[in-house]
Image 1 (cartoon, rainbow, N blue to C red):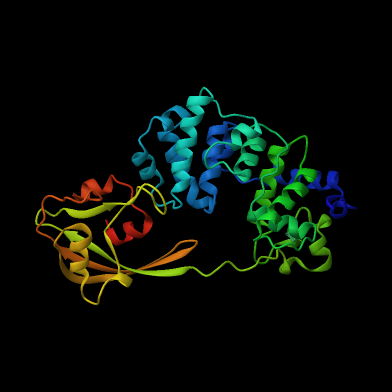
Image 2 (tube, helix red, strand yellow):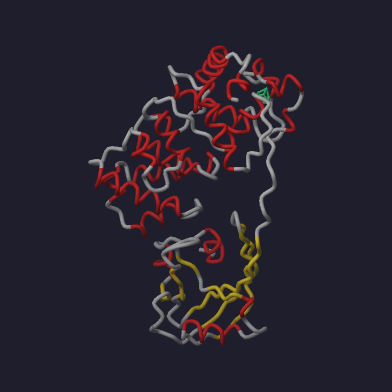
Length: 354
Ligand code: SF4
């Protein structure tokens, strides 16, 4: 089947055109200044679901603070989450941290260059595995994500639904056949750059595309119809009231989220699920849940935060409490300065406002 798809596709000429373009036009990115597998690993984890421009300052700060696997492995989780604050998808940071500790414990601090070992590390899926093996170790391994599937579905006129997991496996087989044996590192990065700068999701710049001559979608004018992607399920909204509860000392009541699941171990203002609360009875719910008496103050705005699978619709309230000591283990009182040292997700940074 792959043979059918690649029939009459001139792999050698395609690689030559792609790599010539890449060497003349590649984006200057901080993680491209090194072949260090740990740096490349960090960059690839940060780049998942996140734009390059957003990642650059985070990457620089992170590598300055944790230049080696040892420095990251020895850091406390809360500090690592703080460095990741604002980047989102915090399980990426937790998994990276766990995996780096595995590297120190089981591989003497050397990132494995063997596919199976690398893929067994926490958070290293086929894409990250392929990216590290090709970019850092120059192994001809595909690194297929949504961008790569878009480019290849156009190049080879493949109309499989890229939202389906088995389509990705199919593309991995195709890319494995096409990838340059001489320079797989540049090949994967060239495809990433092509997808980011020329073969973009909307209005691809076909007229200046370095591989236009090889592109079947361009030949038949179908580039606007590819890739085929079925719509994701709609996110489910959940309604909350977030309470900025302050005591007389100017300290706020904050909550540490559970150590598993969404935003695990991050800090937030306590959130009252409005679906479970009778109208106007937020303080009673609060007392029952946390054992803390609060007096509700004025409404301080609304906030909507969209995750990949759900939406938080949050009403923000100011509130007061006389409490000085808190019994509930999830909660603690913290001054604004202390709060600034703790990891908060973006939604609650916005609620915090300082
Ligand atoms: Fe993408 Fe157009 Fe280039 Fe084809 S010719 S790879 S559709 S930019």
